Length: 249
Image 1: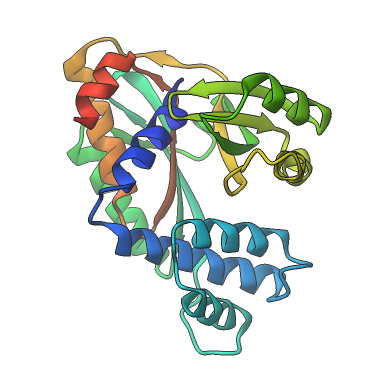
Image 2 (image 1 turned 90 degrees about the horizontal axis):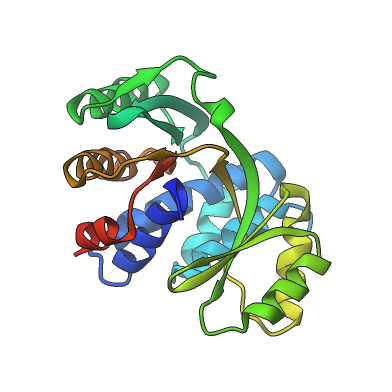
């Protein structure tokens, strides 16, 4: 595993006992509002909204909370308008980082993200400086208890590109255009896939083998991820599993 995949796994584990559930809810609700504003409130016609609804329900966001967010996004209820902003930068050891935000104040968010980078040994970069090291992919998780061969067969027939073992989960990767078909095939086969997501997958990785440097990288990623406006953080680090395990502990 590398970069975002390792970080996503770490968050997945921590999330089960993390007291920050309210913050997770707030980020999901914001994403639902934006999806409804950009594509309308009809989930049958708005794939992004349908995906965010699934993610929110899996995170136990109440249905009435989701419905209010949809109405705010579609204009049926008054609400704040958010815009999508991406920032690029470097963590310690030259690790490339992409930060995706939803903000109602571009200037404030930009200043705060820059401050997080600088306080944690990183640096902001110009647009395009690191994004060439990533590819947009569709990803969907399947419980680790499911049979690898069956997952592989079903997913590949539906258009998946890769299957990776990520400790507690299998992670299926596809082109963004094939994501819905892959998830539906896994679901129809009874393999209990999670909510589909679009992710930035690194094409090259940076090995971080020093425990002290790894902790510096992870502290920056966690600080960025903890910001209210930040929706996703992607990085191309490759940190040994034992160091990741120690950090989780």
